[in-house]
Image 1 (cartoon, helix red, strand yellow):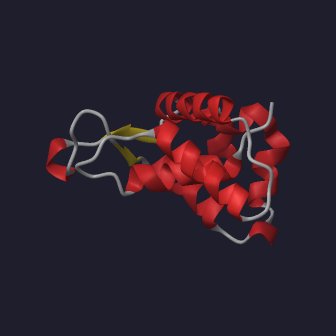
Image 2 (cartoon, rainbow, N blue to C red):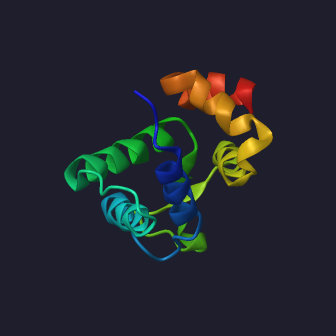
Length: 122
């Protein structure tokens, strides 16, 4: 399995900006699919993409890339902030495609989001 890094990037941006609003990975997946379609790419299977986004939410949380947002920062028990690890991941994904870091993530496959492997990579 390989990750949809652009979808993960979208989820991280939404977590970063999600004060006072619930995190909605399935909706973000739908918006991502619409964006792909508008760019001329085939529309992916929405049910599968929604499920994948929900899986990514769990993976990012369990891996320490996102954490529950504190109340004083707009937390409502259903939204997140980026951790230091999450900020590093987002920096890689937001960076220039040709810098090699994203390719290193891709090359690691599923292991790329294992905290110890990611920390070594980043």
